Amino acid sequence: MPNPTYNKTLVSNARNLRKNMTKQESHLWYDFLRSYPVKIYRQRIIDNYIVDFYCASRKLVIELDGAQHYTIAGDEYDCIRTEILEQFGIEVIRFSNLEINNNFESVCTVIEKKIKGETTK
Image 1: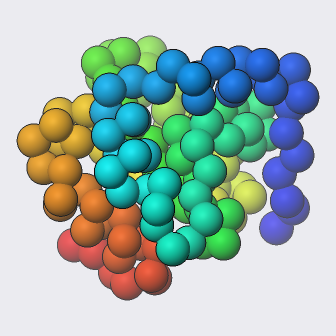
Image 2: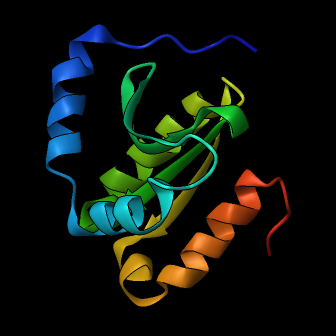
Image 3: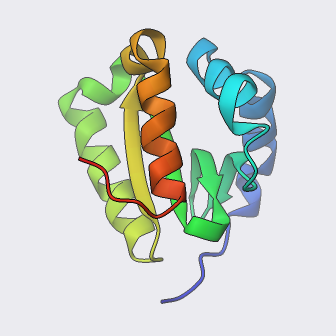
């Protein structure tokens, strides 16, 4: 599988997104991922996309989805994006902002199992 390159024109946008994370992204980052023993990147550029969180060692993308993702156009875009990332051998897992707000510990458990290579239901 080819390694993804990154679109350098997205660098300033990625920096801006890191500085202005959503409430849910901040919660997941500061309360779980930032201090996780495996390196996780936030707002990482992969190919022509900026992903919310990326664990390079496990080739795992973690996406947090707000309301815009639950439209027909948003769903179609996410499907295409996921297919492209999967071509690089990257797995994409998604959580809604609602899941972060209401089931934070469960989300963290799923992420941890994925990073450790354990199967989840």
